[in-house]
Image 1 (cartoon, helix red, strand yellow):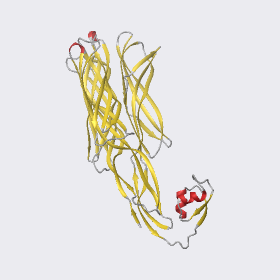
Image 2: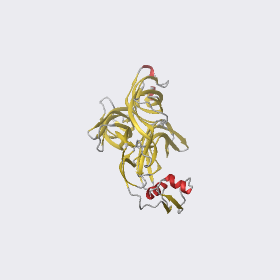
Image 3: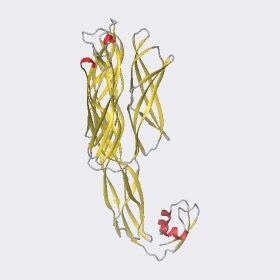
Length: 497
């Protein structure tokens, strides 16, 4: 007798790569003739912009640039001047062998931006972009299930409730806003720097629609009348929806990674700003499935041959998003704090035998006036670590981006700078499961077989005992009055079927 199983395919996505790449860029900045010579650099700021993503010929690539601003104090003692620059970047990931192109999820961040004086008329600007890139390949899982099973055949079935990635894509948020600067910045205002920090605070499925809501915090620094520097911050709501092909049921989980793709801020009359920005929300939809697999089979009193295959299920064990507070404490001179910004790289993961260490690091940049009303700047480095359980069969993907606007607290002669990072964490199973895809049974003679066997339970399961002795689990339970697994070393009466 030969029993063939039916293939019931399941289309899903498999993560084939998830790692961080970085690129450092430098650019020489020459002062225009109309600007005075440089005495010192007061600060450097930047905004990372994602322009494109590409999957081609076994390689995944992203490109974009850093909008950068450098504020310097002139040698002639006049008011500070600002220079602007654009530094392009390209990052590449080599992919393992794939059958077809897939989907890219990426979170680029500006890990570092700084500048130094090389001559009275030149500055050297340096930036470092880091990006966590994940490649998702479309795959078809072959799941074999039996049909019209004979009563004499025993099957070991197991159910696997899993969360599986099934769809990925992106939705763009467009923002066109007119904003009003603080009241004393209505005349002669000039922008020093600005940046946009998007957050997705709500994502849910309604039928075949993915609803996305969040906000983008625009923060920056401007120069107003009498060369006063003022920081500003605006929270701009974002909402959009994406229509997906299938409808998803309860328990659907969604992860959304935002990235700025366009940012332009224009000064208008009477202290007004015109914002034109775009944010792409890269989403991953995971559906809950119950997979029923046959892991073993036999027929009592017969020779049984099994055809098996290994199934690799790309299950998501954990997917969460949570804020992490970071801070730096340092002795600090008295004065007026004008501007605080946070720079942070992507988390660094290092795995040991029992735990994985997640390392975060970055700097706070503070612009202030000292007691003599001289403009000064300070950089406060920080680092923070946490540990997670380690498992060789689990792949961790963790990315970070800035959350709430950073700020400071003073206490005596010291200062505390603090901010929030949003961590998106995903644990992906890399385990394999053996499943039966077909059974061939050959009858054997029962002349030499006993009708009853006495056997000691030695840590084996009832299935293993029944299969070895030519019985069934039900027959053993009935003969011994069992309602649960036998006790270790218990003597069992095993009727041979």
